[in-house]
Length: 393
Length: 145
Image 1 (spheres, rainbow over the protein chains, first blue to last red):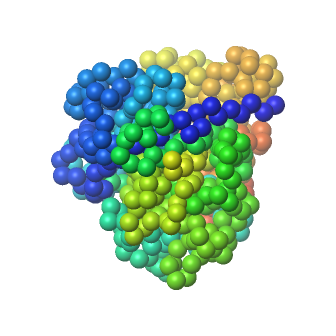
Image 2 (tube, rainbow over the protein chains, first blue to last red):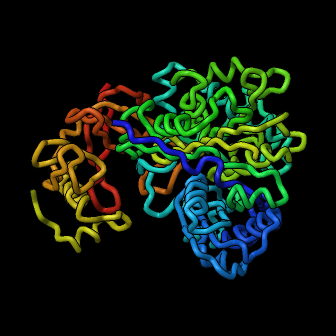
Image 3 (cartoon, each protein chain N blue to C red):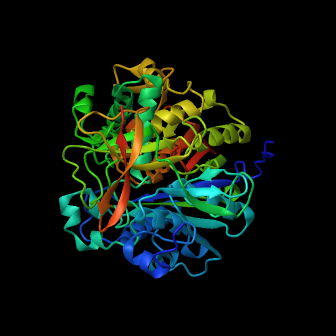
């Protein structure tokens, strides 16, 4: 039995404000709350709304009470702290606006680099004791914990074995990101990357090396969403949430997933295209999540560009030698901001910022000509897959 | 199945583990060097991680039951860095895998893979072994190529 697919929220809610902080290895004593507030302030200013207009607030680990109080949002009627990836917050906020729980909502995510990432990070007591950090190694994690990073590395090894694919398939994701990041001043890593450099990079958890894993950063991102009607009265070209979904199977544990091809990403792809009036061929720019490079390959396959195991050859076939990056059918770039592998690890927030920026036509030298439809697929195949079709309004 | 130690003592033996009524049988098993996964008393279906209801028949008669510990490597990674763990040295590579147990298709348990100088690989048969960690037995797998 298939559940009935409905999409009454189609094109009803829009992104109207975007804000961020610099993406840094060390923000120099700023708390996660400070980073959230910095990003929120720029998003609200960008949207051009009054503080009194913001009646909803939705954040990741920094409590909404802290951000509401720091910003001085006088009257909020809906709030939520939600789990990552960032896309789950976007879905919550969209639903809240669509339902009327609130009309204009601030959505934010910020993170501090965890103590487990490096020796300098481990020497910083504010990182060691950062209660709100969900990405560092918490004390209960051991080498054998089948959660977090383990699943992506272990499934990557099985992927390579199953399909007879080499690590160079993963490397194409990293190299594509670097080529795009060269045109993104916000990105942490902007130097070009060669396949030789990729294949020679330090191994972290086989088969994934340091260039297959997005670099932790101190950063915040924020967005303002409101109704499509209200969006038309604000300053920017609205970016509409045309279709949005999440997807998960009944075996949502990294080591118990039934099979690589029976996962949340297949549920997302099926549901997203059922909900959407547009097709894959209408997509102008694609944002497959790349927190681990394997995830981007799996999204290329799941959304329908090619069959399971074929993403590496697909990317190679659609590689622009001149630009040293992917241009699907000579037209559709992937992760124009560099992805989180090059821009920095913000659990999908960066992918949304770039998608909105592209659909507004504000991406400067990165601008995809005439970009009207973006496909954004945050999260991974284990337990937190999500997918979005965004359209310029 | 032994009821010892009592619940308070179990927490003392496994500090840092999120013990609850659903997984206490697994950790009691550790102390007796038996890998006990939850099995439905009504229909025999195994499941892991430890949950209180059988997803096949909805029985709540779920009992921590010993498995053979035999199976083959389904997922594998060799770690060159990772969370600090007693007795674990990442410098020469530390293999961790998810073993598909012979008891049931898709029933997997994840732990270290020891292979005595042989490179472990997906599909390789393994057997359960016990090591000591932080004063308690800890289950790992040994490759039997």
